[in-house]
Image 1: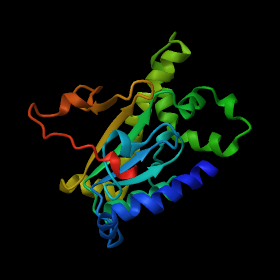
Image 2: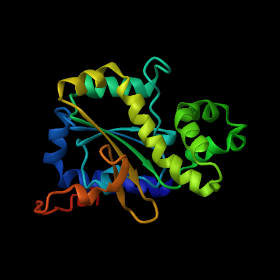
Image 3: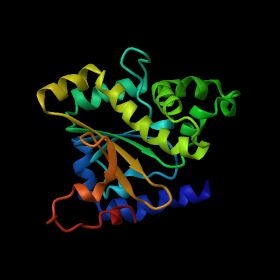
Length: 222
């Protein structure tokens, strides 16, 4: 806890005063372009690997980056999606899973969460993904199934996302697009689901040949 408090002290004393103009702008309101739905895993820092700063991503973080189909569980995830799309007017929604996800393993090994009733109930929102992988890959090892399910879960949550009225309306009008990403914990890579090929491709492969130079924006937090 002392380490966190020292971090707060550093932020209040050094970072905030130095970037006062930037934070004054944030205090006036938020206009994020992206709703970023991802896992609560502590190894994922979306602002870090997307090189973004406060105000650019509207974040929704929870176990397994699951998105309950509309009407099934009218909770915080549903409310966040509705607010981001209908009120904030985000232009993109990203569902980002990651390698080494404990929730994905729990989907395959329900006994591992038998004493965690809330987790056990929550991962049922990935049942379509689980059955798709298990029933269509007989003989696959556990690790192979985990890798396959990590990707299939992202795709399945995109299906669920489209059942939300605000998202369906945004997609129909062309003012909103949805994306599936996978973050590699061990190598820092990001792969994006390509609907044309029904496969995950390197994020860098989707960039135009001549991109704008990247400015390191992570220094804001230092």
